[in-house]
Structure formats: structure tokens, C-alpha cells
Image (cartoon, rainbow, N blue to C red; front, side, top):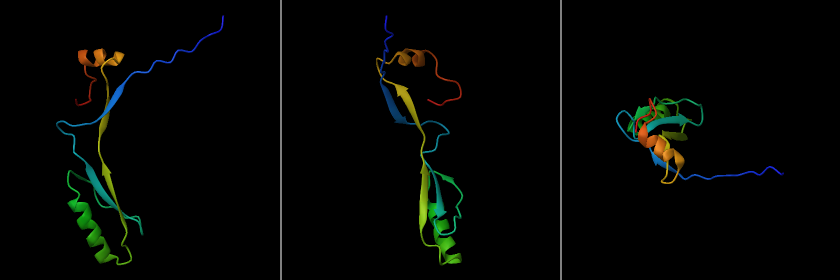
Length: 97
């Protein structure tokens, strides 16, 4: 008898994580000339942009910056996925829904 491989595919959905304590985004800026970085701020890119202008004022050779924006996502089982029933019974501990 030859062993057979069975591959089962279950549907998953990728969704932006929202809820109490979860920021819309975390922003920071990085100077591409010298590697200096701004502090990170929740939900507002303004402080990182202001930092970039101030940094150039102090170091005129620093004129190219990279904006880092972090968002949080989670996967959820779609209808028909065997994990959908499990998640409806009990949410994972420590993970906001």
C-alpha cells in the first residue's frame, strides 16, 4: 500500500486589529544619511515629521528620511474553517478581539 498525502485548505481572513489599547498606527522617522531616528508616536505622524525638519536644521547634509508606520493585523478563520467554531467558544487569552 502506498502512503497518500492529503492536503486540506482552510479559509482565513486578514483584518486590521482594532480595539481598546490598539493604536491605529505607530510612526517614527529614520534619517537615511546618518541613521538617526525619531521617537515613536501612536496615531500621529506629525511629531516624526517635525523631528525630520529639526534634524535637517541641525544637520543640513541630512535630507532624506524614511517614515516607518506600523499597524497591527490578525488572522481570523473564515466560515467553514474548523477553527471558526473553536474561536467562537473561547477567545485566545491576552489577545484583544
